[in-house]
Image 1 (cartoon, one colour):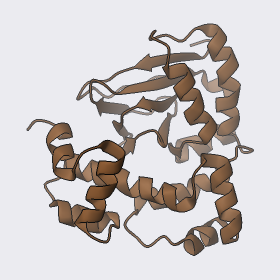
Image 2 (cartoon, helix red, strand yellow):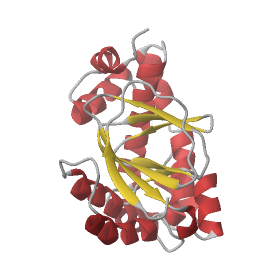
Image 3 (cartoon, rainbow, N blue to C red):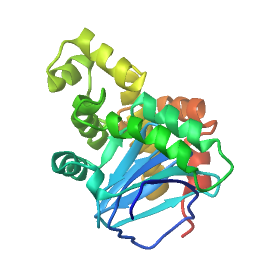
Length: 242
């Protein structure tokens, strides 16, 4: 491809593995996406997106009402260091300005976003994931939390991983994500639990425990607050047909 493009897409319950020579961001606008990237599984939602490096194999599944902003970029728009960094850590905590951009762009009724909007919005997206981006220094610890959300993650531990004080950590998270560290952790735990509800036969109590909730009722309260349904309801609605 010769120029970047923004597209708004919906996906079905399954897809074939795709490869392409350009780079791509996947940013949820509404709902969530079960994403497979070079053999790695991830769950994308309003706080978490993904970067697909050129020729990386990927597939996805989503509900009919879910919607996603897909940003295609020629690989030569990236310097080698940035491309390698994003390839190495492709699942990304989405900065507040990227989430706001996705909501602005996602409001259009058309699948293809016009070129004027692309020219206006693309620089902010590139800057957000550059070395100078407000969330860049937090991406590594966010990835570690995402990989083990059920572990104990007090603010002191997260701050130590980033190499800052607790108060500075709060400021960094607020600046980057518009959230406190513990709010981001709570979202990560709930995201992991939703994935297990749809992909496993584990009991709801077991999922709650391994996600880091003190008891099953805590998971139920969190899911009801964010999604308006119980874990059992969520599993019945979103688990793929056997």
